[in-house]
Length: 342
Image 1 (cartoon, rainbow, N blue to C red):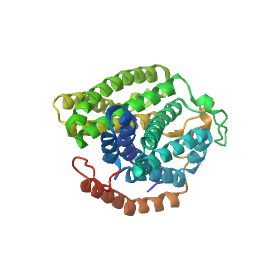
Image 2 (image 1 turned 120 degrees about the vertical axis):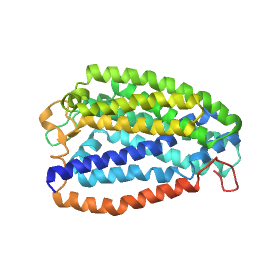
Image 3 (image 1 turned 135 degrees about the vertical axis):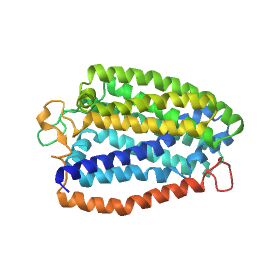
Image 4 (image 1 turned 90 degrees about the horizontal axis):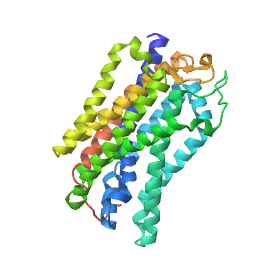
């Protein structure tokens, strides 16, 4: 197997890991965002938290695996990305920590003030994490200023502009829609009826921001269309994306939430594929000088490292998939409160 092929395979595997994380932890973040709006009393808030309580830590395994794979297989890109996004990643780390701690600590005491404090952190951590992911994507699509060695030459403020902020808001809306559909499947009664309106409302907000981001990236981010001209088969991805978006509302109106959730998963996967197509073959595009681009070829590890990594994936990925499937099967069905609930 050639070195170039190994690099491409690992680029694809990174996308698989990112898609897995975005779909699974995506509805977790969406649930966290919706938590203070859809739940009207303490019982409903506990139901919302317990819908993801047994799942969230397993979902984040995909993010940890993605980070480890990027570090081991593309160390130059890993170093450059952390050089550019160090402060946002620290904020992201705190957001994820506060979200996790909120889940574990909230119900340890019955004090309303105690529970309200952790509710606020649960919402803030989930929302901030989704927003930061989107801003990072928007900044990478435009490229960042780096030196010949890959060191970041700007500041955090250089990463924040109109486009990256809109992509951040777009990501929050997407995950809110994804989370509302998941919650609708896991709840019943009055709470479920309330979520019906949130599914439709979040879909409309997402579609509006989707149109804005699409027009903005097409007009002002030239790299977003470069591969579509050279590889027309890529147009299948946005076609599937548009059909899946339309099918979400169709399934919601027919009260078939599982089909809406599958379509939402397809939408997330399509967005990540389109983002990767925008970057390829770059991992870190240099906005100041294209010669400084860190690609999947000049930023990769040795051939031996890439090969050993594939062996580890062949052993580890079935285990991760088996664990994930077992957990979701075990906690299938409607969420209920018991003595061990969050």
